[in-house]
Length: 169
Image (spheres, one colour):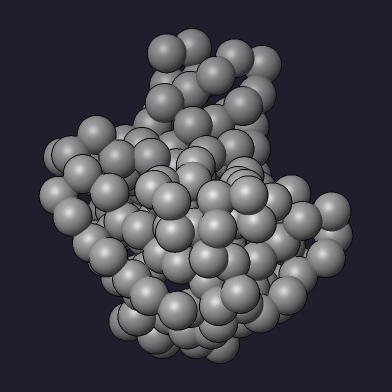
């Protein structure tokens, strides 16, 4: 489910954990613990978003766990599994010139410096060294997001990105 333009998806609710209604959380933030700095969360299901206050947070090396107010049994909490977590876009810090949130890159048209269309950014993910743009066009391109060397220009208002990339690669 895609939130409105005013919301940014920051995670997803996983499975129930334990007998007191705790839930695992899958963070889409980097680092993953940054998710907890953004409050309140909006929990989404079927085009509906509601703010659910947290009753508790537990962070371990393996899991990030939360308990929502009013969800203190596994049976009740199970109703939240699989739902999206979003925040209002204005909660995000303003970035410096030349920095981008990954979610803002999704949907950009990617062209070469010669004007050849590679496709549309469908996903951004990390391999550890640098982010990778997954671009769907006539073929799928996995293009490293290395500014200046490969990605030479990003124009968010025009929804366009220029990348030095061989369309046949």
